[in-house]
Amino acid sequence: MKDKDWSITKRLLNCLDSKLSEVAWAAAIPHWFNDEVLAALCPNIQSEIKPLYEELQTIPFTEDFLYRGHNIHDRARNSMLTYLCKEKTNQFLKLSTDAARYFERQAQNNNSRDVIEWLYHLVIADFQKAFNELKSIQQRWTKQGRTSELAFLNKRLLEQVESYRIKNGNQTELVHLIYQEPITELEWNINIININDEDEKDYQTILAHCNSKLIQKETFNILKKYFLVEAINLDKYSFDENRRIGTILQQKITSDNKPQGIIISGLESVGQKKINELMKAIYYDEKYFQQNCPVIWWSNDDVRKEIIKSPLADSAIQVEFDN
Image (cartoon, rainbow, N blue to C red):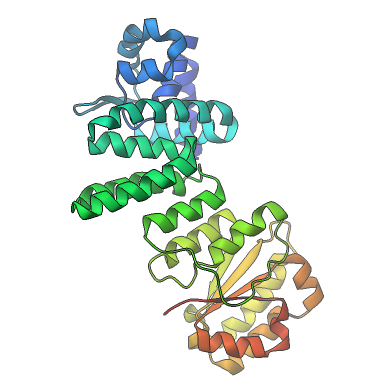
């Protein structure tokens, strides 16, 4: 959350009376709203919605939304959603569930905008139902040649992924469904070090997708952002710098803000001798490193086989990807 955006938005919200504040928070959930949407999200003050809706339109962060009513300005809306999701989780889930129910009824008319908005909220309210519905809609719209609508649907769903409002395991499932890539298991045994039990399955699932060209970037971003995995791409460094990387990594895992894991890629450009030198620099104390931070050697199959031969790599996770 950008502090400035939230500071301004919070100041505006604090000036509202309790009922208008309730309506404003509800209005941040959908991409657009009118009095009917707000009534569905605020049933306890349904009889007062029309005047509250009119008053909400006078607030600086409210904008016209063509043919649909109004919306909360993106920057204010994003800061409000971030706050709700992190600090008022139950309220966020309830509002998302109510929005999913409302837009499911609207979606019966098969208007793509309503269908997309329904699925956008449903991935929060009931992920498994959303997952099944999405598969069905993808198949139907693909057969009908509705590629632009599919693209817009994906864009909306990725908002939920990129904002980390979806649970981590569900994030991975959704990303792979969006990009139409099957979930497969690595043929190599992946040993996760220093990842707590509740995250271990999700971490392995994400790593298992690293050999997909289409979603390599998304996989990497989820690892980097959610699991605090740091990345070193050796393509960008000279050999002397590679040696220095080992020292840098040693310092990182002894710091208070140590990463949960480190990905090392670009090995194809380095050569086996230099890889061995780098591995020695990193695994200066195998036992200590195993206890503190796993290394993910992200490489093509040929390089990976060479790495596995080294006893220094016993504690490293081996992940293959296609160049």
